[in-house]
Every structure is written in C-alpha cells, then in structure tokens.
Length: 228
Image 1 (cartoon, one colour):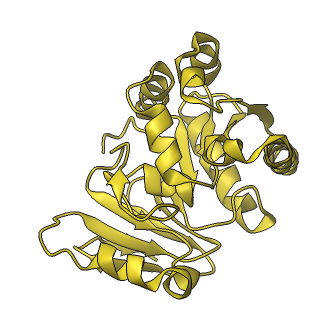
Image 2 (tube, rainbow, N blue to C red):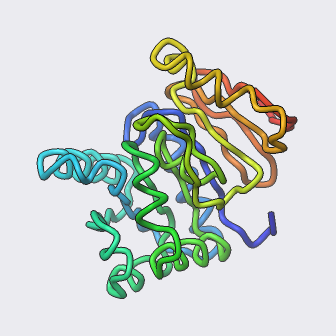
C-alpha cells in the first residue's frame, strides 16, 4: 500500500471496548499526524437491521469510547442501501481521522456499500490518510470474499483488501460453525490469504502488518509476514 494511505485495522471482536481503547486512540493519532481531524465516525450498517434499540446501543458505545480517547464522535445512520447514496453523509466523511465499521452481518455491509458514493468516499479518505477499521463483519466485508456466516453460502466482499479474507472470532468460530469454517479454508484454487483473528485481537497495517491485543492471528492459507 502507498505511504499516503491511512492505517487499516481488521478486528476479531471488541469494537468500542476498553480492550481496544488503545488501538482506536493509536489509529486516530496516526491519522491526525497526516493532517486528518480528531473525529471518529461510526458506521453501524452491519447491525442496523436489528432495530432502534441495537442502533442506540452501538451509538452509545461509540460515544463512550470517543469520550475515553478524547475524540469527537459522529454516528452516520447508514441503515439501508439508499443511505449510501446520501451526499450529506459523503460530506461528513471528509477529513475524518477514523472510520469504523462495527459488527453484525458482513454480507449486508457488502451489498449496501458496493458501488455507492459513500463507499467511494471512504476509500478516497483512506487513501489520503484516514484510518479505517472493521470489526468482525466489517473486517470480513473488506476482503474479496465473505465466509457464509449468517447465510449458507459465501458471498462477494468489497475488495478493499482483495488479497485477504478474514474469519473473525476465530478462537470461538471453530466451535460455532466448524463445517463452514472448514469449507472456507479448504479450497486449494484460491490464491488469497485467509486469516483467522481471535477475539479482542486486531491485525493492523501501517508500515507493516502488526498484531494488537490478547489473542492470535492465524494464517490459515497463503503467506503473510506479521510483526508480533
């Protein structure tokens, strides 16, 4: 990736938690050093179909984290595909220090954002120094292919990182969905790098790929150098 690009964080679980507080502060500080604002944008789309109570919960958690790390918090109510065409949201993305996709349904994230002005602006901001994070569903959606998590079949991702595929909650996922995990790992024709990221753990790219958190990052297919 170009040196002008912002950091990207693939998080196994724990968005807006005290365990990830240090990481989220670091992501903001890096972007601020590249001329971005001390502003933290929440993208709740992965779970926004769960209703108003869920939306309010994530908004509250994000605000609490922003308060702890000393950042302005902006919740972008992008709940359906038409919202990703809203130019007011495009404007709000400009200059942000951190854009964060929280967890839920990764297939929904890819279907709502693919080919939209909001996604195009997110990528543009990331390429100019904004830090970009995806937790669980968000991390999965950033790859070219998404494991069938909330549906039986695998699906196409947003391909922000086209060479990488992610299984989050890896230390728990093998027990939850062993057959789907096995079917995702096995295809030998795939040239992508498949990563299993444990809970409360992140894989972060700045000048190199680095592990953050209490768990492990498992390289399940392909090869990736990780600074531990």
